Amino acid sequence: MSLRRVISALRPEIRTYGDLNLAFVEHSHVLNALSDFHFDGIVVKDPGLISEIRRSDQLYLKPILWEEGDCAGADGTFDKDQPTRITHKIQKINEAAEQFVGLPLPGNGNDRLVAKLLRLLISRSTPLSPRATRDRRIGYALDMLENLSVEQDQLQLIKFLNHYTDKGYFRRKLMDRVNLCYECESGYLNFSECCSSCESIDLKSEQLIHHFRCAYIGPESDYKRGEILECPKCNHVLKHIGIDYDKPSEIHTCMDCNHTSQETAMKAKCVDCGRDNALDKLSTHAIYEYRVTESGTEFSKSTRNQMQPNLMMDASDSDEYVPFAVYQILRSHESRKQDLYENGLSELRISVSEQILGSLNSGLRKGLLTELAGIVKPYLKHQDILSINTDFQITILLLNYSGEAQQQLRDMLEYNLDKMLRDNQWTRDKAVEISISLLES
Ligand SMILES: [Zn+2]
Ligand SMILES: [Zn+2]
Ligand SMILES: [Zn+2]
Image 1 (cartoon, helix red, strand yellow):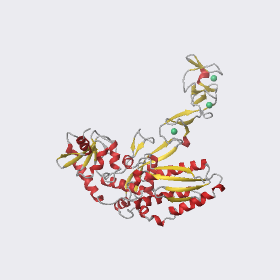
Image 2 (cartoon, protein in one colour; image 1 turned 90 degrees about the vertical axis):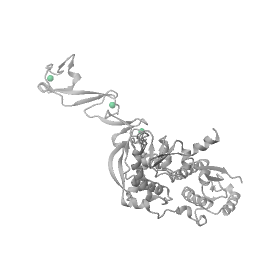
Image 3 (cartoon, rainbow, N blue to C red; image 1 turned 120 degrees about the vertical axis):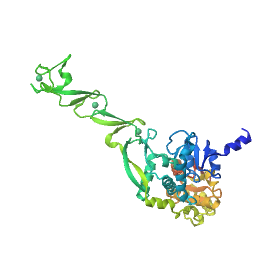
Image 4 (tube, protein in one colour; image 1 turned 90 degrees about the horizontal axis):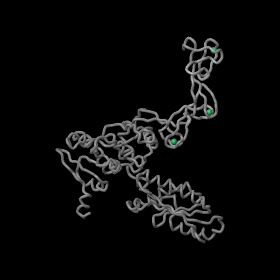
């Protein structure tokens, strides 16, 4: 590719239709440059770009149009034959979004996410409505929120929304209840009748016949003789239902265990994981529509607590860890007596990805690491020693951990720190690396 083509590929294509300036975006690498240009809305050629735009703190409130018809999470359709048809709608969104221009977002991950969601809903004057779809495990999508969040598990998103409903930011309305597999929380279930004794679905169901004349009751097969029905007890032929006989109920015979019964059980087989669920074991979740309340509106505009308090904390005030110089002294002290420990001494190092650290100045880096140290601390034994080294790694001296215990700790920390950083939208890639080395005496 020639240099000129590379450069032009990085420039958004902006077209003007009457009062409307629309940026046409084909690739995500254009998005970074986009905030330097003036335009009213973004036309995307790939629906995957919608979430990239919504996750950008600069662009998330911009009206997004899709080129081809309806698309969940977009604000409308770009009709190339009548491009100005959407002008009014775009202007309304931009006017409403004006009130948020220049307002910072909260620093805390979840508060930040809910603030963006509230602003998005307010500027579109719409509730967050669940959309029924086969594309989601639970059968419903929450498009606006899914696009904003790195979390893609709908049940977690519902939990998040319910948390902020409890805080008063949303008013919710029950739309549906979903019954999900107990094992994997999928909504794709196949319901079937089964044997009440052994749960086999191989049932033979027959009508019971009650012969009025002799009061015999038995399954239809007892009476069948070729095309006619003849009572096995009194040998009379049965002709008219309601006069000679009636069919009071059904009887089910299990082909696997021979159990016969007038009752059957029901079970729900999960299409995704294969588990047979008893109906009373299904996990039931309410699906709501969420409307922004007055306190939600207030929160979306509030600039209180918008700083990043934890990150601004002076790291030296922390009691989460010891200064690295002290750590080094303690380490050499411990290594001299390490024969006392059956499993010896090891050092665990947590490195946060360069993608995250590289975007922070040294004060913020320390702040972030202090916060992470606070998360790590409860997983350690009280005699373990925690510090932050000069390479901005969290360093922990582990006293007497077996190989298995080390592995467990490492897995747990990796999972929790990674999740914390991703939930806070620091990154979508792997956020931390953890290494453990044994210290030689
Ligand atoms: Zn059975
Ligand atoms: Zn009879
Ligand atoms: Zn399942």
